[in-house]
Length: 280
Image 1: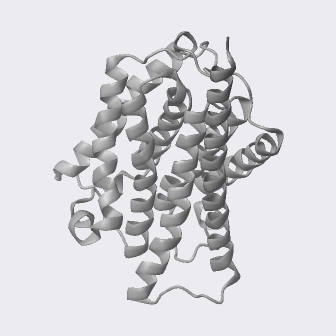
Image 2 (image 1 turned 90 degrees about the vertical axis):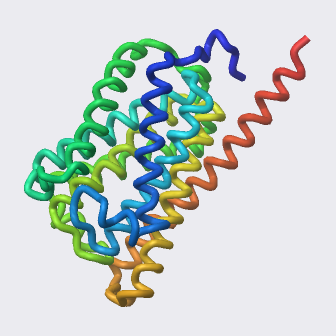
């Protein structure tokens, strides 16, 4: 059960930042739905598989950004802000390590770095400002889910670190070849998921479970769909390769876990309503 005093509203500036983030990721989501229109305007050159996968990532982020703007309270900001800081920091570092991929003569290059570094700095400030504020819903999720989230966080975190430090080795099983730049950019996806998993294992309000469930479910489903759609046109995936099915299986687990978290959010919300109704 959430009470207003335990779940305060977030500052207007933070809400404005997430509104800007929502607009940015909406454009990024166009890589999935309108690749021919958006990809030529992207800050660096993209292959068809990378285009759809990046689009899937931004579609999943779009849901989190919309929830952050519309709810604008500590729950779900306790979950979304650290994840946003993690994602933008890793992507910014990867971009700085591969400046050769960017054309300084293009406006898109400068917009990319501004739209990533400014929100990163502001959200890092709020992450520090509210570092001692307790969770709005202090109870951890039920034991099976807590154990799963801890395991998921460990796997995603280790893989994300490996993908950033040795992208060639850790992406060798992917259905399409990844260069070092994209491997390091994609490591942000897994590191962000690890941060969210550990935070939810500690405490999970219904709206936080909803946010994580939507993000995971959308990412898993859209990543697999993007692979199938692109290969239907270019026929580059080796469907008999074990690595291809390992990749599909991994994202299928992400999809299933996302659906499970959505169900758990519904259960937790119903329990909260029942507790309120039972109060004298």
